[in-house]
Image (cartoon, rainbow, N blue to C red; front, side, top):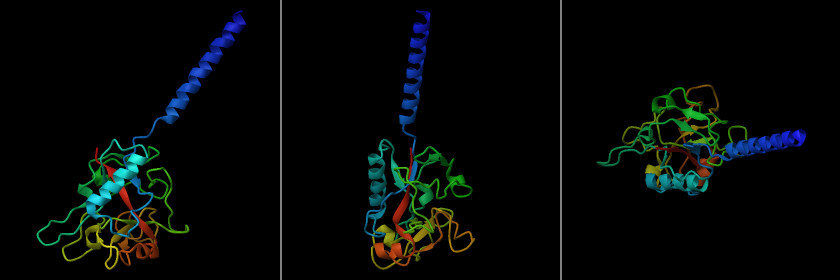
Length: 220
């Protein structure tokens, strides 16, 4: 009798332990950063900032993180009397975690200095690794339109394909999510400001190693 009772207790304990570990694994991470798994598909025409933000929100919702408010990490340039928009001012205060719960940066200042963005951590909303330099096809060019400090470029310099409304002529500043380039310069390794694209169309973005992808951050 004693032996049967002991076995029953052990079996129950094992079941409870299994159930606890299973539920822990099933808990979603507090994802607050990702690289879009896909772009809207129209080159750098993202529908402006509003369209890019909505794309972030839609992808996050599909991944089960729609309870947060999402913003695209994109700058715009000043046109006429309109002021430029700095990407760094659109994304909240941090900290930001990827889909696997890894911290990308604690705050805005760290994000633009010693962050933890690289090929292994700059994951999509689904937790997948994005192709980088050396992969086929290379997709490490991430649209930002920003300087390394996360700010807009001076007036008269369009680095945003018409503030994210063009899919033909023009250019957009991109970063490298994998921190890999043609050399060891700061620009080649920059996550947010490496070089301008050849154009604004989908094919032009792909020709320099991109696919119209961009960063998304949760602001709350």
